[in-house]
Image (cartoon, rainbow over all chains, first blue to last red):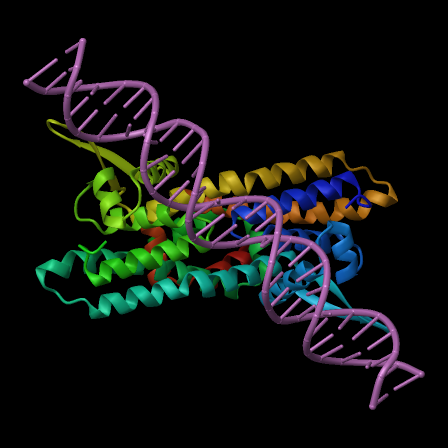
Length: 178
Length: 178
DNA sequence: GGATGATTTCGGTTTTTACCGAACCAACTG
DNA sequence: CAGTTGGTTCGGTAAAAACCGAAATCATCC
């Protein structure tokens, strides 16, 4: 860590802390930050030394990042160690992370709610429960749909609109049309 | 917990587990779920008994929910016990949670990045760092803007569009216009 | 078919987080 | 004003998560 500039150190530490708050392992987030800021791909050994964490920890951390699909393994001629680099498009990176989180932490809830709503009868005892769970299900499904729709739009276009476009106006206009 | 129907028990347990994955204390998430599903407001004692957690734990959990702004305290005539209920609009609830998370877990990062980019010079040593941090900052600021814009649109309209509207088409149309 | 070097697995330890319950505080009651 | 009830704070403990390092596995090279 000491062979990094103060700005980079600060960035990595901060990113790790923020990752933690989002339920992401601090070390994993730090590895991600390091790979992001690094001008060239790094191998596990270099990461281990730079962040002062055990190589085994780096190993599992890299697997986590690979699971998210946000790192590539690259090789050098005549060198069989694995070098890792973060995928180039930052927007795409966040989308891949979001994909996984939705898949792991939203979809199961939707399924559970669908299941519950299907099972529940209409007797007075359960009718309130059914109503509330249906409402929640509806919100989550709708949110999921919005994400899926957005997912289809190329990141470049989203970024461009966000900078120049009047999103509120657009939405209200659309709402009136329908 | 045993005086709840199996469907409700299942819902609360599941919600607690999912909350955990999003970095939310399991018990806090369970309290939230219980208040959501309950037909009437509950007091700390009732929550404590129902979920089999200590009253002190319920106390801090309720403060957490209050911090998010998603519960109301209500009183009954001639009863100084505090009763708690979740705010009525589910969309609004998620928005309030999102607001807090952005404020606590995104804004500080944006500030840190702005700060870093401002400090960094243009010497060859730091130019790469500056470029990468700028890029990240740009993405986060843009994402933040998108959220802020959406935040202005009433939830009812968003929900309606999501169900009936062709969001992708709309966005692409807008992209062409600009 | 070893030997070498890279990577992964796993048991034990450390660190962090969550939780309990007793003590404390505040407001009301008789 | 002593007793009761509701609510909070906080120190100690229990549970969970992260981490290390040694041993095992894997892959490649000679």
